[in-house]
Length: 412
Ligand SMILES: Cc1cc2nc3c(=O)[nH]c(=O)nc-3n(C[C@H](O)[C@H](O)[C@H](O)COP(=O)(O)OP(=O)(O)OC[C@H]3O[C@@H](n4cnc5c(N)ncnc54)[C@H](O)[C@@H]3O)c2cc1C
Image 1 (cartoon, rainbow, N blue to C red):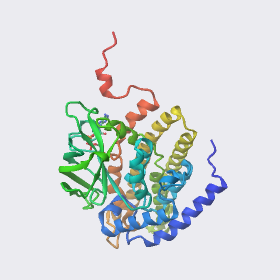
Image 2 (image 1 turned 30 degrees about the vertical axis):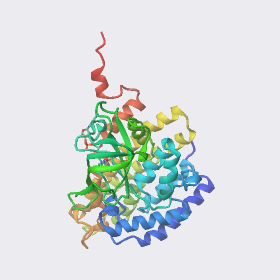
Image 3 (image 1 turned 60 degrees about the vertical axis):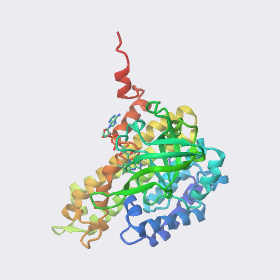
Image 4 (image 1 turned 90 degrees about the vertical axis):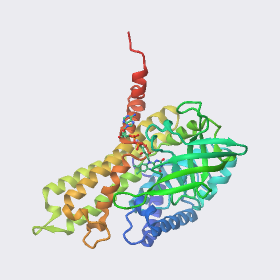
């Protein structure tokens, strides 16, 4: 495998870099690039929408999609380069739910009507989405979900509750998995619906973080009427659509470049800041910790590039390998963010806990806000334990889950 970029890829990286350097000057004061920054305050959300429009004008918002739906048929490696430069500059604009999850799912398993109706507005940066999957009693065990949809003519009438719905208070649309056949158990009898968040009967209530940021919501459905034409896939086969969505392998390169940028900022801080008359950068313990994170960033980049390279190769075996590695990169990227956050706090000391609103907050409070977010990153989109299950199953060929181990008859 060859890690070096082609001259064309180098040119693209520079073009992305120049664009983000210029556009990020428009970021609101104190912008740190987190989901909380984007969803919590109105100016953060407006900046996200502004960047989405700017990226759409450049034709970069959905580069990997086919041209007929607003994309550029870009290669996976080009997408990785775009992802790393955009994360490095802490840019918003790319809707993780509409662009990262729903778009590829509709392209893979959606009807032509759905592709024509929903993909172009996403590609133009006009519609934003949220994910309505988790429920109070269904998280890792998503198939335990209880939200009901009852067919009445050309509509489903939906009743129930979703939780931890990131950005549901901002989203125009949501994609939900609901139970259409209560006689069927677990993953059978579920359907996948596209739902207008402004429809009568949808109530979105905030679930504030301990730092009072507003990322999560509870979403209640009270006799919400959803047209049957908004169902993706067949009735009762929503689990297949959900699985297709979960299977979109990601390199998670953005998480690694978030740490890379954070590390560079921390290194500058250590060069400029003196403690007991000496720059922090001269302290051997601090140098050691920074060097360790630098090594781990390089490992993460290598892992992300390897996934992109395997995906470009294509074929069923490659996709299984990429699936296991994508789970590995999710665990690695989120836990590296956690380790970086701890190191940042050890170096900054008590000042590291000061929030960005204060003039005493070092590094504009980015280490503090990062610390608040990293725990959640290890849970969202599949917890570290569930990702390790996937690595064990897909990567190591071990039995699929504890359930299966326990259900299997004992060997005689
Ligand atoms: C930052 C963040 C954003 C989120 N955004 C959304 C969103 O937008 N939309 C949405 O629908 N949901 C969202 N979620 C919810 C998320 O998908 C769930 O929190 C996650 O799936 C875990 O489910 P749970 O919280 O019910 O925990 P549980 O599933 O109850 O897990 C509890 C603990 O048990 C462990 N565990 C569970 N099953 C297994 C197993 N089989 N093997 C080993 N360990 C296991 C878990 O790893 C965890 O440590 C978000 C969560 C976070 C933290």
